[in-house]
Image 1: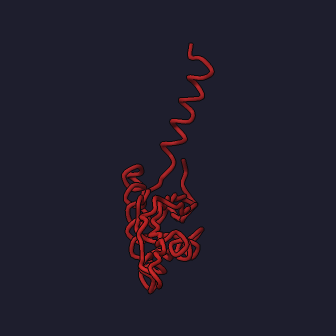
Image 2: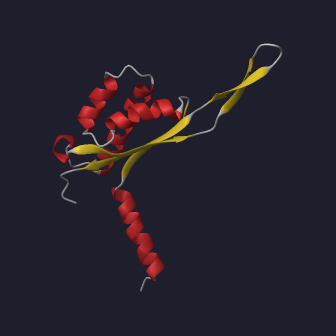
Image 3: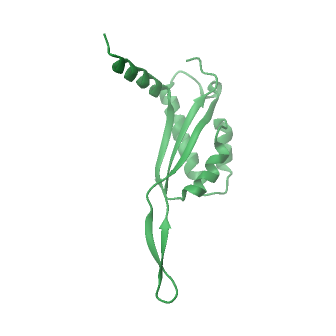
Length: 134
């Protein structure tokens, strides 16, 4: 009874339900600095990733730790009956994209001015479960 387009939309909707992710937008850190921390936790189990972020000296790690906690909470909301310990959650993908820039002027010698670009970023983190039955 449904058209091909409708069926495809339903399939995509189901697939989207299984995706567990969290987004951090307009974080006032340069994307390059954030990527250094993001690369450390890509593909790592959730518990280990939280430890890495907790003991990392970088400022960006605080924001990423919070984001990872949010993603875990999102996973729990979608899988209320499952336990985190048995699911084998890991950081499936984490990508850092640049966001808007604040442009500022810094005085330079001899009456000149240099433009300072204060960068910010967007981070998207997606979790995967290694041993889930569904």
